[in-house]
Length: 184
Ligand SMILES: [Zn+2]
Image 1: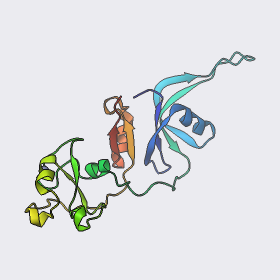
Image 2 (image 1 turned 180 degrees about the horizontal axis):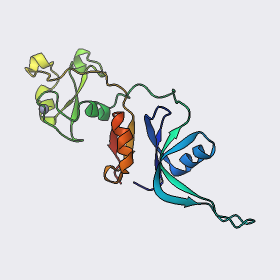
Image 3 (image 1 turned 90 degrees about the horizontal axis):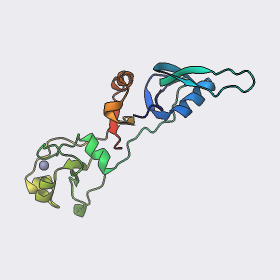
Image 4 (image 1 turned 135 degrees about the horizontal axis):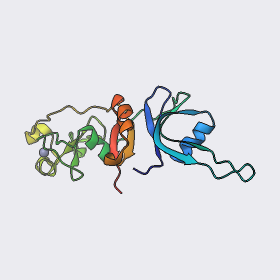
C-alpha cells in the first residue's frame, strides 16, 4: 500500500473507498472531511517565502466525510468476476473451489432461452462445465448445490492486502466490505 492512500468513510462511517492523499487533504482543507485516524507521520508544506514558516500536519490514514453521500451505486454489475465473487469461487455443482480459471455456467442453457442474469448464472469449474454442456441440470443429472441470488451491494476497496494499515480493518470489517487485491 502506498503511503499516500487514504480510506474514505461516509458520514455514517461506512467505507466508501480509497482516495489519494491529495484528495483527502483537499476535503480536509475544505472542511468536508475530518481525520479519523492519523498515519503517524507528518506532512509538511513548503516553506513560506515571507514568514519562513513550515506548516506541518498529521498525515491522515482514515478520513470521514462530514456529509452523507447518498448517490452511490446500489446494484452490482453483472460480470463474470462478480458472479465468481458472489459464489466465493466455488463450483455450484461440485463445490470445488477455484481461482480465475473458474467458468460461469448458464443454469438454463442459452440455447434454451436461458438469460444472462444473476438468477441464471453460477460459478462452475471447468470439469463440471465440460460435463454439463448445453443441458439443464435435470438433463445432466447435476444438482445445483445452491440457489443463485441477486447479490447485495458490497463496496469494494482495492488494496494490497498485506500492506493495508491495521486501522482500516476495523471499518472494513464492520460493513462487510470486500477486499479486492491489487496486483502490483
Ligand atoms: Zn464442479
